[in-house]
Length: 88
Image (cartoon, rainbow, N blue to C red; front, side):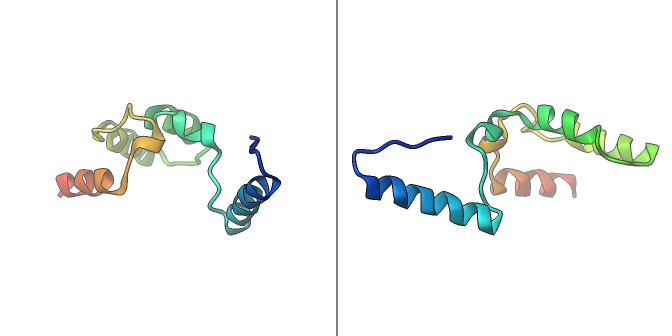
């Protein structure tokens, strides 16, 4: 992940911002948001230690999301709020 700019001060400001994000724990690798929720869940769920019923419940919850095949970077808080409300 690199940055080029005509002025050194612009690059330094960009680097300072990325460094601050890393320190705060809010940095997100730009490529990371390209994966869909389904792809992310498929990989992530294999690392979880769940009881069989919990695994089934999580799989069903994922399948109920209307944004299962959207890239993670395209899922917004209102999308999740609408989905949660639809479960009630």
